[in-house]
Length: 266
Figure (cartoon, rainbow, N blue to C red):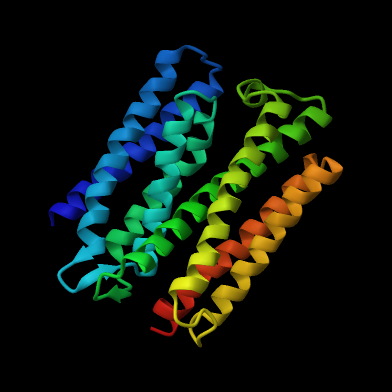
């Protein structure tokens, strides 16, 4: 029962943080104090969220990384990375999207059950899982950044730079941050695939084949994007399309496969 109470409080704080940041953006408030109110509220929410995760993931039977726990863990890491990044970079507005999504993940985790228990502790496999989750989290942030870039680019082309656009960093700075996140996420995804081939007995086993193939496709998409950026200076709509395509394959690989195996096929 205490987990439900703590989770509910975390959800409320995530929503309040998003509302504070949204009001700051809408009203064009630029004072640092308004930014920190939202970030501090979100920080408290992530601490409570971490408590819920510990209770749900580390069970007496072993480590439970079922689909709802996994989604909650990924969104928690996304929020934590955003908060850390916003200390030095103007990325706090991404929290308007990320924090409600994280709150929704907590609600799903507290409401539904899908178990995937690892009964024995195998450090290399756990490292592989953690790297995969970190890569997915970073590339999720890149996808959210790509969506913001789409809106920003469209409004600038239509010569309607409203309050929302004025609150964002310049387009060039947004693109630079996008590729920095993609570069780091791609490096972690590469390590994830390599560690999977090394530590897992058969990456193309019956229940891993589709996940492995989709992960490799996603890796190839991001590799092509980074190569195109380096070779041809890809940016704008081209970069956004490749980013969202790679993210789509990645979500199908990690979240889609879990939903099919653990919820639909049970």
